[in-house]
Image (cartoon, rainbow over all chains, first blue to last red; front, side):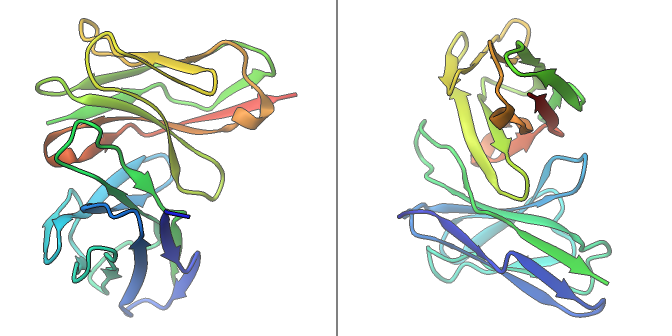
Length: 114
Length: 111
């Protein structure tokens, strides 16, 4: 089955530690995205990538970093510089360069930092 | 910049009631419009979409029509079920295929 996997589903970390969230897709999509979801705030774009070895900042990139070494993978690192890292993180992917573009989402990772 | 405004919830309905969730947008050009649904503890699923003015997206009994003159994309369903209980997000696609989301509307359907 094609889809997007995110692991783990729940993640707990101590303040001051960096943590990396995994996102893998086997849909052969060119573009991948990371969103943060907080209660009552909808989804906000952190980073996105349209091709391997290239990525752009979204609306709330501060305190986060990403890499795109393979088409299938787009890991997100939440660094200790992120002031409020506790949130639900969603990864998505899409085909682009077409009017049929639509984003498919993974199941999410809930990160709790204490 | 782009923005999406959707009605604040929560919305609570009885089974078989009519549903409307309002969504209006601000954008340059003619963006594609989407409704996504999120069930508890899960990611988002695309519910329906429309890519140009007067298009009607539909899926699972839900419908929404792209109204350029009122910059709206209201979600409707004639008869809701308990299984429709979820959070619904309106979104538009701007430049570089980026999505801008509304804040979401929680729908609870009681039997």
